[in-house]
Amino acid sequence: MDKIDVKNLISNPNKLDELLKNATIDSVISYYRFMENITESEKNDNGLRHTIAAFSVRRFSYLFQTYGDGIWHYLLDVIEDYISDRLDEGEFFTPASNNKYLIQLKGSPEEIFRRLYLYFDEISEKMALDKCHMKVTFACGIYDPSGSADSVSEVIKKSTAAMHRASLASSCSTEIVFYSEEIYKSVVRNSIIEQDLCNAVKNNELIVEIQPKYDMKTGKCVSAEALVRWMHPTLGRIPPDDFIPYAEKTGFVIDIDMYVLETICKYMRKWMDSGVNPVTVAVNQSRLHISDPHYVDSVFAMMQEYDVWPNLIELETTESIAFNDYTSVTEILHRLHDYGFILSMDDFGSGYSSLYMLNELEYDELKLDKKLVENINRSDRSIAILRHIVAMAHDINMTVVAEGVETAEQARVLKDIGCDVAQGFYYSYPMPIERFEASVFGKIMSDET
Image (cartoon, rainbow, N blue to C red; front, side):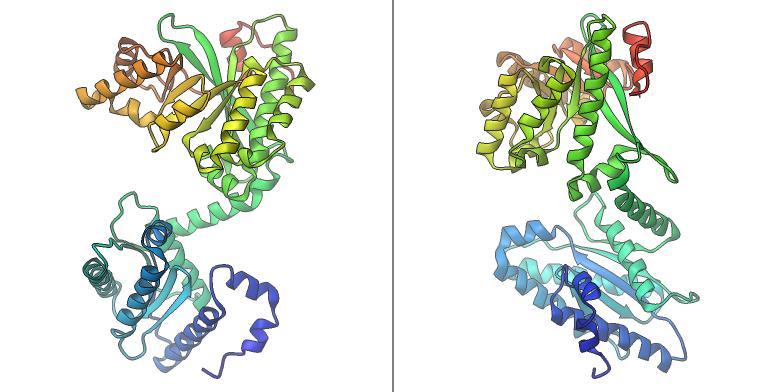
């Protein structure tokens, strides 16, 4: 233990800051001891490499908020005591951060898988018995470094990458994933996306496409939605589901939203100058905007700059907007409505606050979540639920839009229950703005914007 040069570690502030983002100084020291123990163990075993696993408690934030600080620390003590008591000679374990653990075990990958699964299962049973059926599950990644030249830190990175993949599983049960090159490529790709995203607007790499929305009675295009795509110089076309989560995490989603809004305003101006009646275009707005006291003024100033009527712009927000200060949300949406913007609640049915928000906030449009539309063909119950949602929306003077319509049967049912507008691959894929112009207006009117 005396081998660790803690003074040298602390004298390197950049390294220490990185390690302490999610860890205490004690866990940092424990982490370095863990690495040194592994190195020493490999020397004693004539260079034989042993498997390293990384694991974390799933639903970390939920459990902490639900059960409180006391029970959470009890769980951490149970994990450390339970696993430490079951290690064989030459095996090592350490907490690496607030919710990450590293363990080196001897044996074949299959044997280690069985051991870890047993450990996790028994810890879960103990917590359920001791703490009122508290449901604890784990995400674990395993990497077998035998035959590789990876350093200890590289081995840990790879087991951690597999752990992150396990944490993405849709079920809430314990998941154990073995590291693979496919996981490595995914981690590298995501790292590039996160690093390069901040330059995407500056380098003109973002592309705005439009997906038309159709009146279900007449079959005519009555509006559209602006969708952003990223043409990365080396990774190629990146769909929004791959980069928007990073944009929201870093706050860069605000710049992306405003870039899309300004792009649509430029085209709106061209359309009006060309003598056509433009259709309303919806632009997604992140809930992060609600934290900006200058947001409403910035949006309206953009309308004035391009001389675009606010009622040609539809601002889409999701139910997650309710996670912000509710008083601020109400005030901002009222101001936007007073300026003349059309307000749409996107992904209705995917959260828990929908009905309350519909009662309190001035939305003009209700956009059904894709999953509600997907369930149409599965049961009469799904159709009954949709019928009542549509009727409720009409009773409070809201237009109902169904997104993700992909089949003729879905379109037929939605039309029969009174849905107003539909959007999806059955009608049209997202398309470049010039193709949208040719399809809807009969001619291309836009130069390079």
